[in-house]
Image 1: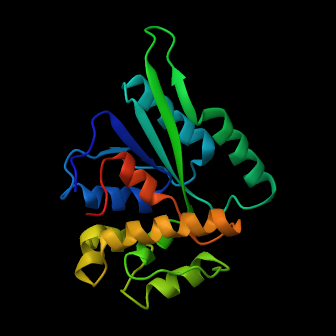
Image 2: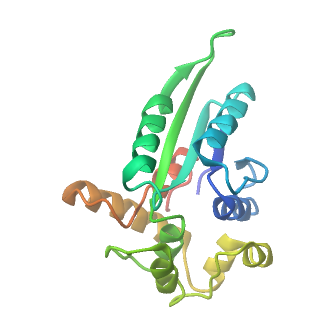
Amino acid sequence: MKKIKDSITVIGEGITEYYYFNSLKDDFRQLNIKPAYPKHSSGLDYLEQEIDKSIDAGYSLIICVIDMDNKKDGKEKEEYIKFKNRLSGVHFTKKPRVKYEIRFIENERCAEIFFLFYFAYKSRCFQNQPELLDELNKYCKYEKTEKFFMKHSLHQYFEKTGGDLKKALCNAARSMKEKEETDRDYTYSQMAELFEALGIKPE
């Protein structure tokens, strides 16, 4: 796998993403993680604050990892679409004029779909997050708790229990291809695009 590109930061929406990307640091030492520790009741306002901090810090590519399970309909969906449309894409700072890009990487229902892809490809609709977690637990013991995240280095744990990052990336790419072909709005992960932006591809 290739060396990670410079001047890229990843902003996780919650603690799951924070601990997962931190676990990648042992294998990919140049990976930058923002924020240092995400707040639980943050919402889009807090995410925008972290984006602003990343712009001020001079990152040329800012990647936001988003859970879609609470943005599928109603007010939450409407607010997220407006937020994403307003911020995604290439922008320039005013003084000095510096170019940067913001990308949104979505997981449906949540980051655990990508964790499941370490082990197997699934395309059925999970009705809720617990149902997805039950499926993941068929392959490895997993708990969506900070205690579990602190005990286990997630990336290494998945690989030790029979998962594989290359498989996860291939499965994530497959999910997006099928999403586009069938116009489905469930069980997909854009994480392969994130890793590609970081210069990491399956060999």
